[in-house]
Length: 416
Image (cartoon, rainbow, N blue to C red; front, top):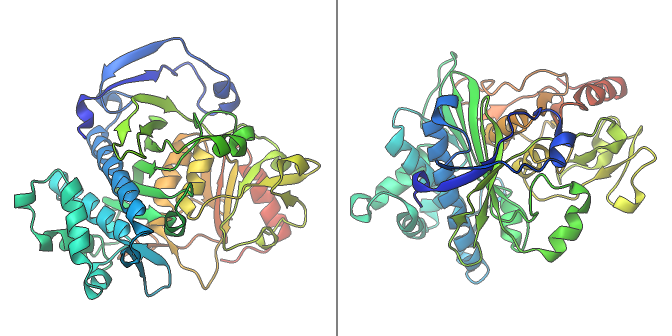
């Protein structure tokens, strides 16, 4: 779909404090403007407007691939593979990585890609043809100009051996073709995310997350009735886009069930929530960890029932698979905190955090390690694929950040 011709309307929010989410949640503007643009701000305000526009476009089409492939997965088990690390991977993962790699190389040939997948496993399972066909049906590149081998090479352009970085700051894309693959494989309404970010000279400048199964009417609605809303609504999906200095915005994806995937046209700015007390916050943790593994869990008990929250018992949100889904929850104001503990037996990957970091930051939140230091995306000097946060990663609405760091410091000796 050509987003450049879209006529989009959005709220004028310049008078609103972007860190005051409580004010925003109850704000309704009568001033609506129509512009011919694919983004909710002008090119003059965004240095990387062209790159963000391209990222929104390709993530949108990648989401369509996910929806289409997911429909066929449960009737054809040949679409599901098992990688060497025992995490499931599907035709959709490879197709999304190939599509995004091809489109970005076509528009920005000098910018390398850091991504999750590698075509070797795909080739060995004789599923290359399936991926090639999916990509050719969704790419903007003419079929006759795109060779099968080019599709597979596009996957490898993001692989670990594709590019050797130098110690100095670098410019590159970071892609997670499907974050929350296990959720993707569950089908139904389980959330998963296509995540793409751009790092320029070592600094995160933009990010786009596509979530086809997002269900709430507006990401800025009060999250208190999210579970009730989800029971009665069909998936609408959203794209979340962030640009340094321009905020975090979302636009809906409609007609998912019909496979049309059209932009709704209304960009809405989103902010983190306004919780100011830890026990009033809504927390997300990885599915592989329990509340007891959090250092300050002995000070605050947790519940998954809204009827039991309060009395210093925080609400633990039962969320989807994948880290980026939880970043999306915080950036949208649905959750207050996402906290994950680093573990020696589990390597933390850059693509599980990069795009989420800028989306949360531009929504007014904060992301650090457990010592309060900035997450270093260049810790893996040569490949930029692994991050090594001290203790773990802490993602908050900003207001709660210092309080939680203090609790972590008091209740545990942080593992470096």
